[in-house]
Length: 387
Image: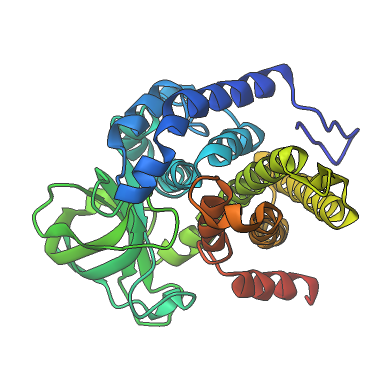
């Protein structure tokens, strides 16, 4: 969906974008679908799958070819996340977090030496990336973080913990935002890259989650962890500002994840409604069911348009804070509603694990919470429209 709102609008995927979309669909059907419920039940994070995803170019979608990436833009990125999430949102979430948070932070704010050092391993799937902002005492209030970095000569000593971190245990490298100044000061935080195996850096509790169970969520723990100043991304005090810019792209990620969930749930509900017979006819022929399907289909189209408008702005280097917040908010709320209606259309069968909609239902809720709650998106949007 190559949309340029400043000239003529083109609502069709280009040939290259369609190829990327087809490749992601094929990958999901071949390597993910056979294992969806197995991974969900056991909460297994399938590390080897992500190595395979790297070979397909899905672990470095936005990374330029010179650093081993696919060199695509955000329209292609949405296509990849959507197609994978239609089959298993857990895997879609992990691919999204790896790309848009850890990898993208280094891509956008790292110097050339740092990009050369870390991006090729991340973009090819050799390494899996994590990104740490949230702490136990901070959710939406990131400025209240307690994890600190104190400078000692050419090194920084990190102490504290991050929680709700995707790939907190299995990640090979993490970008973390920690306090280097006064608490509550937006200029009092800085970003650092920490590699797995660094003394004093480890993982803590792995969360037992309602949904997204194959996507690993765990603590990052720092205990007198020493890293060189060469691992600092950008200037001291820029960490919070950097993270807010990274989250602009992250909102597109969660929006794409939401779109995939919505399409998956809708597709399953549409199929079931055509097959399920009651009172001598398929239930889709009843107005009560057909109207549900109409609302679901319309909200999916609206979500897609908002997402690709945000993608167009991101590709053009524009300020997308408002539109990406709108896209994330709308798509995530829509996917929860659509997953709920998909279960309702299935009736009692929708409440069993024999049909895919119960998993879409469980997975969907994270989308209204992760990378900025719906309420925080409204705060962001209101600040822009009330200027």
